[in-house]
Length: 162
Image (cartoon, rainbow, N blue to C red; front, side, top):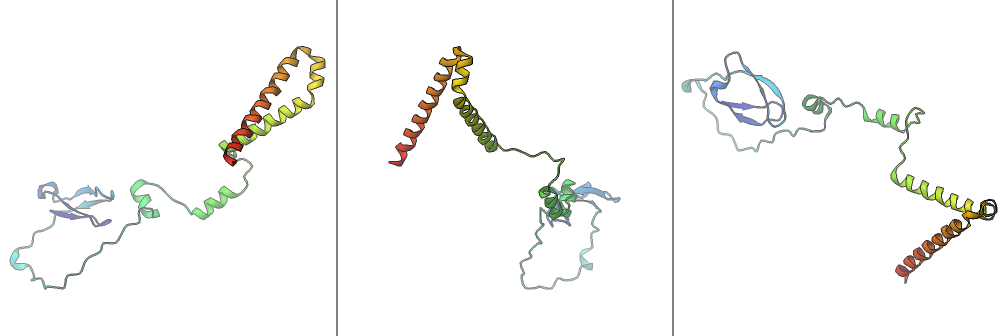
């Protein structure tokens, strides 16, 4: 028996014994559409009308939009609402909504934070050394390392500019 899916018009071959007189629930393997298939009654050959020959017309089946609301609801159970309303909700300011702070935002924040910390340390270097003389070696070592990093970066950048 030849069975046609009414949704995507795909054709399947089933054995005649697979479908009883009361019908059977079948599902399209291509689009997932389900329907009850009843057996096709055989018409005797002598009762068949002669087929008129028509010019061959290429039949084009309608293409199913795989992203339409109806298809997504039927196939996957996904209910799509009006997307314009959803985008307005997303762009509007909601005080209860948590903001996402991307990776590069964190990198920039940390860079600014450490630059500020080092600048404050540089401004108060003499005061800290007077109050805590044991930290003088470590503070001087920190600023030497920062100077070495600055020199290395400028040489690296100058290498590509020449």
